[in-house]
Image 1 (tube, one colour):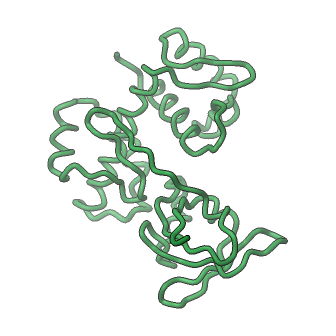
Image 2 (tube, rainbow, N blue to C red; image 1 turned 45 degrees about the vertical axis):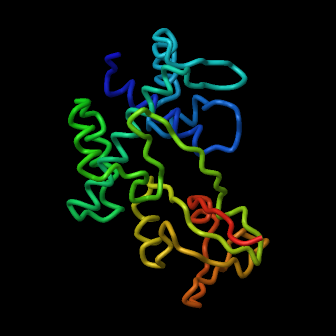
Length: 224
């Protein structure tokens, strides 16, 4: 199915909103508009077009969800994006806070053989530089249970799994405190006033993490 760049962007946005949410409902018009950076009225028009193509379902009370066909199309875009990000960091030497906009352009290069060869050249990676899973060649996406860093109570030990790539400033900050995928830490305390937390790294350094940052980091708990 041939899709315009704008249609591809919408399908990926709807997929990402669902992937980042713990709710079972679909993406709202406003949440799509915020992610695409457009007006809600434009979203409504595009959702109508995608629905006519059998790519999304729109329920007034449950939001916009991808059909099976829409999901497959979204995963194609996500796969390209994350493979290119892996290439940009591990082959060309870009920093992880420099690659998102470049990969946003490259993800629309749709030649299947190019993507297959890129995947093989990279050694069939399973994660991008931010820790996000890369869909396989058959567009399978493994299930990996994680939770927001923000949800951790004092005393919990956890490992960083992935981080939100949407903010260059966030990525630069996480680099500074070395809180990247694979980093292990323990929650020392959580402030009731602003939900900020203090964490201790394995090197015994202690850092204060704001709620905005902790909401952007996905982790898995360690131990019992």
